[in-house]
Image (cartoon, rainbow, N blue to C red; front, side):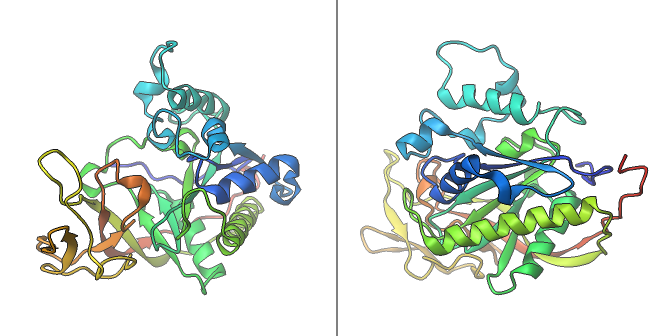
Length: 322
């Protein structure tokens, strides 16, 4: 079972990271702007540090140089002995772990919260990614953002697969005491869109405002919220050599979060034959045809939609604020 994540003291150090994937440009350019002028990130009760997570990949406008940085934050990699042959992203993960962590339970040195900024090529709108519903602060933050931006709308994704709920998170935000990911799309890799850029900027500002409210002693009541929980992934049809044998079916393309019934076409083979979903229950696909997931053999993620009950986030007492 995962321990419940509820801050017992004000958050004093927050990081906003962008460019974890160097071709997801909303976060890259927002962080570059904030590194020059961080004033809009600051709030009275805490400091906010902008971090360009993968500068080499951002300079090359590539997702990564050697390997996916957002899969490199395992304790095994972070604690292993450094060698000259280490992939760039493994070395960078260790640097970020020293800056924002270290990744250790209860570490007083670690940043209190990391907000990691991403773009997706999938038609996912505004997606707030939390490791699990046990993360009470992130769940309340997500609820706050949903209320602040009802026109978007915001969906909440619990990314830790149900069958591996006790497994270690290997994403960047896991090095801090707490964190979450903002995933906005659709936006092509290596492209900036003004609407997505502005939406991300507004979400960050609202997240920092929520943190300020919490630090100042605001209590947040319990609530129920609709979420999508990860059930695993679905790969494309492939040849014996591992090459693609088909593409996402037109009936599925761009229909993230919509119910997918057993027997519905999900792929169209190059031969023209439809491949139908063989599951036994309705699922809700996400990251449909995400460009970066081709190499990971993921055509889309399967999720279940459910309503979770989130307990209240109590106000900090004066002694907790000392």
